[in-house]
Structures are given as structure tokens and as C-alpha cells.
Image (cartoon, rainbow, N blue to C red; front, side, top):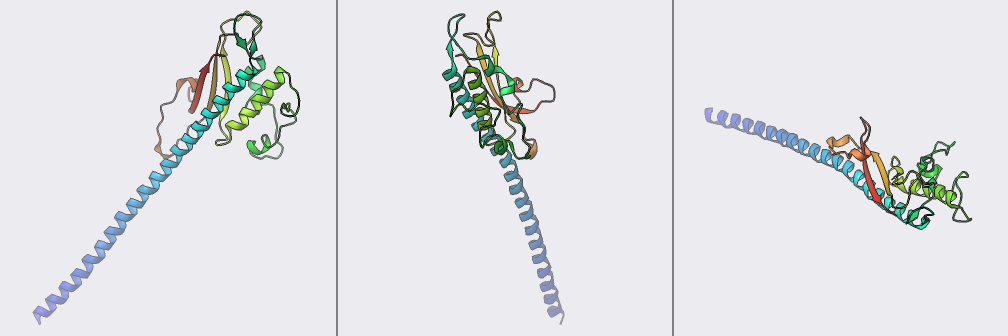
Length: 211
């Protein structure tokens, strides 16, 4: 009888150990799944930033090509220049345009040429109008993958005495920047050129060119 009772107790103990093993396995599996989910979450932020960077690089190259098409021989100095309106911030990022529908910028401004922007595809435009049209076009291209991307064009002018905002031979700086995604414990080495102010947190693509 004692032997039988011992065997019965042993069986009960074995059942208990099996249940604990199952629970431990479930805990380990849950931790592993949480790790995979966290990795995917982090990866999604990195992927979004990579897409934004790729699109920004494409748009920056488009801006270079548009500037070279618009360039003309300078009347002062040797080389070529573009119209001063290319360096007006009001021509980029839909400045001065309004959207009453409350839709996204890509829908509100980019599905058709806004009334305030010259339509240089179907009509003739002067240099200033072409600059305005180009600014609108590249702004639409910039937000295709990230609606928070902003475009800017500046110039380190080598001659402040002439009529040109960017004299012949001067360095032009094309910049596209977008806010850093802080989720997913991502860390970034921020470029000081696109984060000039304290507290700025942007990633960017910068191209320096001379026409």
C-alpha cells in the first residue's frame, strides 16, 4: 500500500512539473514576441526615415536640374545666374496658399495648379513666374512620401554689389529637411547645418552646387 501511495504521489508531482514547464515556456514565448514587436516598431521608424531621405535626395537633384534649365548668362561677371525669385522663401512649402477644405497639402495644393501659381506647363511664363512655378512643383514632390518635408534654397553670394541675389560663381545650397522620429528609441547624429537653432531636431539632405 505504501508503494502504491508513493507512486500516486509521484504521478501527481510529475503533473505539477509539466504545468510549470508550460507556464515557463509561455512566459519565454511572450517575451520573445514582445522583442520581435519592438524590433518591428523600431524598424518602421528607420524605414520611414530612409524613404524620406531617398525622396529628398531625388527632389534635391530635380531642383539642381531646374536651376540649370533656368540659368542665363550674367550681365555682370562671368558665368550664369538664375532669377532672384528662386531664392524667395514665399515660393516654397506652399507659403501664401490657403486650403479651405482642411485636406492634406498633397491633396489641397498638388492635384492641380493653384490659382495663385502660374501654370507654366500650359502657358508662357517669364523668369519670375517660372521661379514661382518651380518652387511649387518641387514642394509638391518633396511631400510625396513625408508631408512634413520642407524645401529651402539659399545662396552664399560672392558679390553683394550687383543686382543678383546669387551672383555668378556663387555657391547655392539646396536643403530638404523633416522632423526626426523620436519613437523606437532611435538615436541620430543631427547635422548642425539643418539644425541651426537650439532645440531643433531635423534630418536633412543638403546639396551645395555652383551653376
